[in-house]
Image 1 (spheres, rainbow, N blue to C red):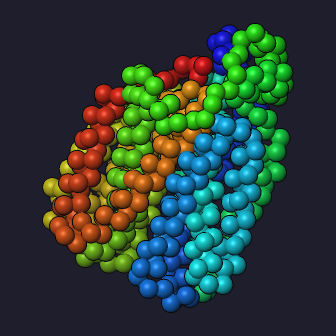
Image 2: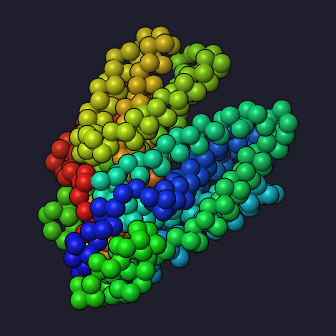
Image 3: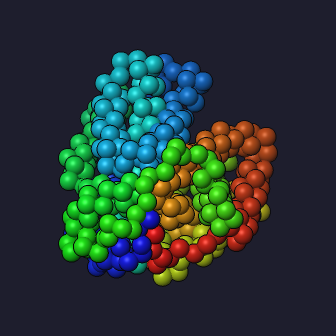
Length: 442
C-alpha cells in the first residue's frame, strides 16, 4: 500500500486550477441530480393531462428516478472500484445525456418511464463517483469544502426548475415538460467534453500496482507531486468486493454505520417534509398562492443552508455539524408537532424554513463530504455508492409514507415520526461518528 509520504505533496498542495476544474465537473453531476429530482414536480402539471395519467402511473413516474438511482449507485460504485474511476466517470454522464434526450422526445408513458429510470441510473452512478473523485484529488485541508460546494449547485438547480417552468409555460404551453427535460442535455454534453481531460485517480492506480500511471496522474493534478511516489510501496489490487469489506473491524464498521445512518435518516426526514411543503400548506387549508409562496421561500433557505455549510465544514468539522444538525432537526420537528393544530401560516413557514436551513448546514449537505472519507481506496466508490443508495431508499420511504401519515394523523403524526427519526440519527452520530476533518485519505 502507498505510504502516506507518497501522497504527501497531493495532500498538502495549495488549491489550484485543476482542483477547481475537477470540482466543477463533478459538481455539475450533482447539479443535474438536483435538476432532475425536482423538475418532475413541475413537469407532472403538464404530463398528467398530456398522457392521461392515472394515480398509480403518477406515483410510479414520480419515484422512477429514485429507483434507477439505487441500482446505478451500487452497480457503478462497485465497477469503479474494480475497473477504475475515469471510464465510469465518462460512462455515467454519457448515459445521462442519452436518457435526458429520450425523456424530452418521449411519445408514450412507457417510453418516458424507461427514460426516467435510466436518468436515475446515471444520477446514482455519478453520486458514487463525483464525491469519490473530488476527495481523491483534493488537498486534505479543503477536501470537505470542495465536496460541500457541489451541494450548493444542487439547491440552486432545484430552485431553477421552478423558475424555468414558470418562464416556459407562457411560451411552450402543454409542451413545457419536453423543453424542461431536454434542457438538461446541454450541460451534460459540456460536462462530458470537460471530463475527458481528467486523469484516472492516482490512489486507485496505486492499488492496482500501476505506479508510473499514478505518478503521471499526480503530475496533472499537482505538478511535481508524482516524484514522491515510490515503486516499492504498493500492493496489488484485491479480489472481488464483498459487503463484508465494509465491516472488517470495529473502527471501519463504525465509519460505515456513521454514513449509512446519516444518509438514510436525513433523506427520509427532508424528502418527506421538503418534497411536500406546498402540499402541507394546502392540506392545512391555506390558499394555493400562499402554499406555492411557502415552497419558494423554503427552497431559498435550503440554498442559504448549503452556503453556510460550505463555509463551516472545515472550521467546525463533520461530526459536530452532523450531530448538531440532527439534534436541531429533532427540536424543529417537535416544534411542528406542537403547532400542528394552530394553522398560523407565518409560524409554520418559519419552522419549515428553519428546518431546511438546519438540514443543509448539517447532514443533508454533509453526506457527500463524509462518504468518501469513511472508506479506504479499494472500496471507496462502492461504499459511497451503497450509502447513496440507502439515501435514495430513505427518500422513497419518506415520500411514500408522508401522504399516508398525513391522512391517518395529520401533521401531528407525521412530524412525530420525523422527530423520532432525527433523535435516532443524533444518537447514531454520537455513537458511530468519527471526525475526519483535515485527515489524509491514506
